[in-house]
Image 1 (cartoon, rainbow, N blue to C red):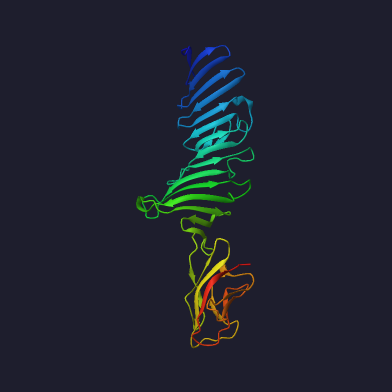
Image 2 (tube, rainbow, N blue to C red):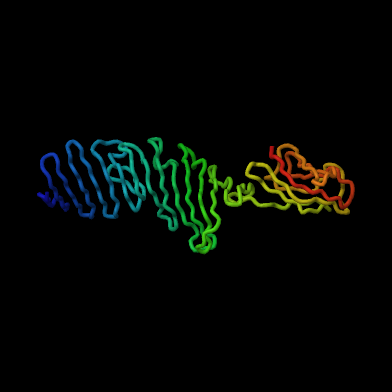
Length: 313
């Protein structure tokens, strides 16, 4: 069936076909916007293509509702349709008379990555944080380049962000893929919680957000020497490893501070680690402080070998 009528009305070109209550119509206005309508009484389905490439799909727009019957949109930029309904840059599906259901979004900021967001019910909308899938290739061409796939469960309004995100990623320095990682992020700032790779599970550095934990050298007291190191474990305990030796000017009274850690590694209550050589010497980790105190040392040059973990409680 061909187009069987056409007309020019106030600068608009209207072409239609069909019979009775079932017919199709194409209208092009003076700005180059095109509206394609299909009438199947009593329903009207409209496909509208704007001059900037935006495409809007409606079902029964005359029924009203907060979305005015908008069921889908594709647009290079966000905007507002003829019924005052907002739509975002990307591909979106909507509940009829409700909120967004799902959408592939992209940002107009240079270098941004596409984001697939899933809106599970009408409690979620454009401004809330829905479950999402994010694919990214960051720092392209640099030694720090990496590819990632991020998964997040979303959070109900008015949360500032999703409570947790799982990122699957692999560094690709100069295009050569290296060790794959699975990292967990959480909290309002998406700070790193831990990382899992072929070398095991690594905690995040509590003193430096979004960096992995490493061994830290303890700050030694006057005339006490190490090396003595510590690090946070994924289970929340603190691992200590190394040796402690008093020099000629060291004092041996119990509670003498012979080393200290950072404030992020303070146990809530006191803990002890015994010399691995069975000498009876041991270290006390004072509760509520980062002090490591000596017990059982009686002479210069006595070395205490330490390997073990203490809790933060």
